Length: 110
Image (tube, rainbow, N blue to C red; front, side, top):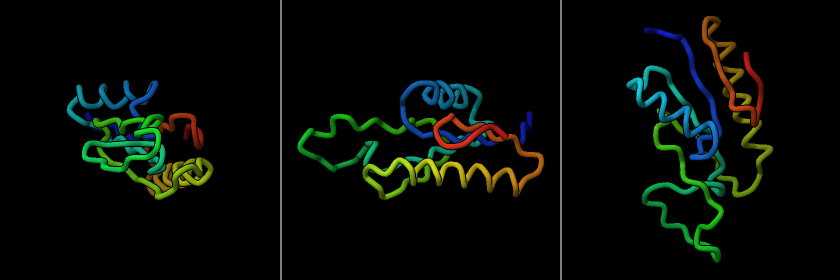
């Protein structure tokens, strides 16, 4: 089954995005799932950053994504959302037969 799809999400183990990643894993990663996230919002295996809160508030990356794009920003959600939208737009414009789903945080469905 070739769906010609790409899914762009916020990349975090939170809400519907967790289900999207796990569903793709259960289907043997048939669809690229790209997480676009700010570095300050997340943590990952081997992340040795510790702040006063001991990484509280940081959400783990959703491990079943096929790709991640991480911005250096600690708190600038506007830039993260903008990049998420730009990536989605580039995929759509570069591949006329590609269906792109956005998680609702930075763009829209195309």
